[in-house]
Image (cartoon, rainbow, N blue to C red; front, side, top):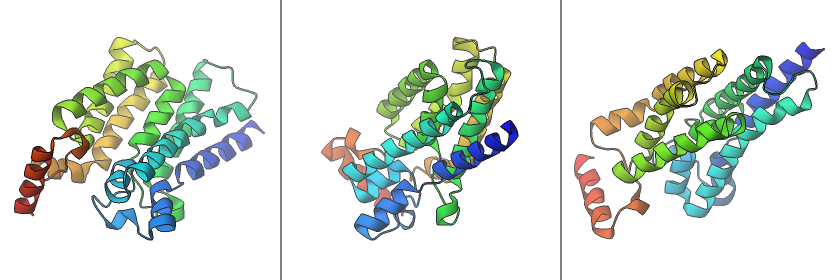
Length: 224
């Protein structure tokens, strides 16, 4: 019986992660597919760029919630003891299922986002202290560089170092999960890395002055 419920919970976590928030909001209220505009990604950053702030932030919040809710599906079981190795292991499996759902959503042809916001919800549910440190790394990098993609990757790459060296976790599965996430972020951000190397990546315009926004727009037009 526990095996059946575990499988059902993992399927539910994948289906929850698969909810294509930005795609559905874009098609329902704006009659556009965000995957055909901007960076052609179904994540919250591109949703903000294509749909605007209000719908974009809504996408961000719901994508975070997907990861948090997927991990908390464990509370529908009654045979895991909180904070034990088996408990954390199954939380991580639920989180991985949600990320796979976000990156490869079954509802819209398996073309999803990069999974950063959903990952944030996952580690927020499992390890809120690590989440706060990663958020700090993200914000510092974003303010310094103005690149959301680079900030996401730096925060993701810092995740295993924070888990291992700052909080000194003794849970092997959490260490392995943090390393897998770093590799997955590298995989899902390949196009961003190419644009960064070519200096064609879009910067977060809300952190730039009007003159800098104009110069950035001109630079992108010239490089196009």
